[in-house]
Amino acid sequence: MIKPKWGLITALAKAQQAMCPVPIRDSVLDEEHPMPKQPKTCRTPLSKARVLAAALVLADEAGLEGFSMRGLSQELGVVPMALYKHVGNKDELLDGMVDIVFSEIELP
Image (cartoon, rainbow, N blue to C red; front, top):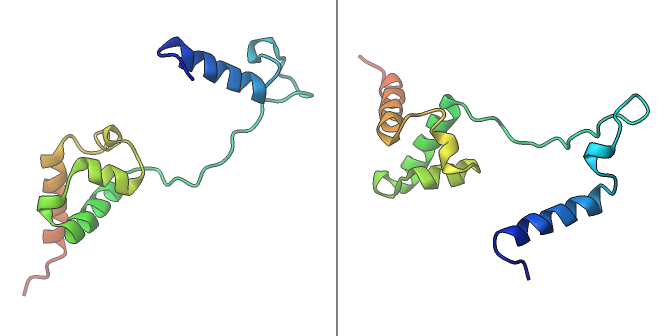
């Protein structure tokens, strides 16, 4: 059982030691021992356009009553605060969605 507060840090340190038996601060990085490469992830970076497009799809499926920033973040696979780097608040997001919908309307 992990003890609160420091127990989690200890557990993480033990897990890191199991993966990397030589402490990072004691290891030497040179041509013979280059820094290990990070695994590549298949995440698509967020952008305002991607956030707005996903918001339109979600609002179309769930309706505006069921639309939330938390639901949008789950749909995009990010934490809710990540959305606020691209849109200031929910009102700005809704304004952007309206702009996209209006731009797609063809005038006679």
